[in-house]
Image (tube, rainbow, N blue to C red):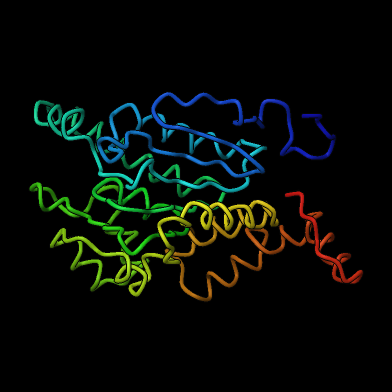
Amino acid sequence: MRYLPGQPHQLPGNRQQLSDYQAQHFCLEVAAGVATVTLNRPERKNPLTFDSYAELRDLFRAMAYADDIKAVVVTGAGDNFCSGGDVHDIIGPLTKLDMPGLLAFTRMTGDLVKAMRACPQPIVAAIDGICAGAGALLALASDLRYGTARSKTAFLFTRVGLAGCDMGACALLPRVIGQGRAAELLYSGRALGGEEAERWGFLNRLCAPETLQADAQGFALELAQGPNFAHGVTKKMLQQEWNMGVDEAIEAEAQAQAQAICMATNDFHRAYHAFVAKQKPVFEGD
């Protein structure tokens, strides 16, 4: 990338390309500005391991500096999304760890959710089949969720003797589906079917299994072709305004934290000139 004076977001060393990144513990493909992260252990319903947790965390942290990624799709290979932590590779070893080791693990898993929420690109989860435990948190940490009628989402921590407050579930889930419904799922650990998940607002869209990936990719491509800088600001404010009152949020959006910055971007001017010319704007993310 050529550095352009006066554009500090393009300072050398501050930007990178992830299209050539070779993932070790999942699949990563980048095309037309959309990064597709595929959990790729279909024979085990795509469970997570210590290594895949850590690599996913590091990948989403790197997204903040990726010039070639404008939107992300997270999905699973085969007919399932993710069955959670691998029973043999994670659950078994956890029973042998001391308290400092257990705390290091729970902080690492939480850091993955933090990285997903902090990366500026919108994340679309494409959910089919099993979406359980930590897999349900990957879906929840995404910005939007496309699913199928046969999908089964379960925050099943209580089923294995754990609290439902894992990886930010008690903060995120009530904001998506409401406090009462979140409490039911987190206490019971029961599975939420696809049609019910759409009615409850957990799924943004219900798709046919055979079109799920195309539907999710199509929407991610629309996002990638939009005003990417503004999308990043929207995501940041959606996160920050959880802890604000309405008046404070309106002021924050008016100030340089949000809308005033976007009004200074080239994309804002492109949109105006395209409107005057009765054309569709072509956004470039600056």
